[in-house]
Amino acid sequence: MNNDGPIIVIEDDLEDQFLIGETFKNLAYSNPVVFFEDGYSALEYLRETQEKPLLILSDINMPKINGKEVRDYILNSEEISIKCIPYLFFTTATSQKFITDAYCTSVQGFFQKPASFQDFEKTIKTIVDYWKISIRPES
Image 1 (cartoon, rainbow, N blue to C red):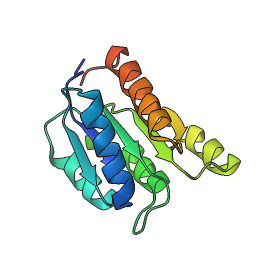
Image 2 (image 1 turned 180 degrees about the horizontal axis):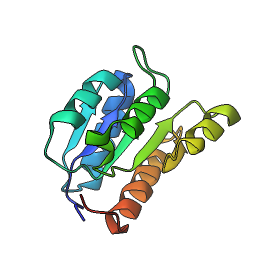
Image 3 (image 1 turned 90 degrees about the horizontal axis):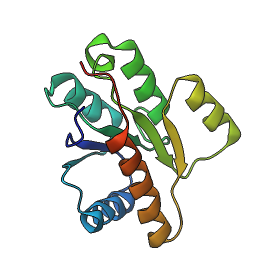
């Protein structure tokens, strides 16, 4: 189990990237946080890296390739899917269709970005703490 692997954040909004970055600084996890502004860059990284990320936090609505398409690509890519990286949506888009579609593609979590910084931090902490103690297959 790689509890110290990088946390991958796929987020095109620079303000949200900043907020997520500040949250991780405050929480002081040892995991590096790696940001990608688009899904294609994240997929390239995931194909090439030998590291085993702890998890992926992804927005849904992004240009070029949306979060659901990134998730679909990972599920259909043997070289990435074998890494068994938990994929979670962290987004403002919370329509019932998005949620249903996400879980139909075996997403491991769907979280709405909270409005307050305190709730934002609490949500991130809950997510990371859960995955740090979760037992996952090793590849």
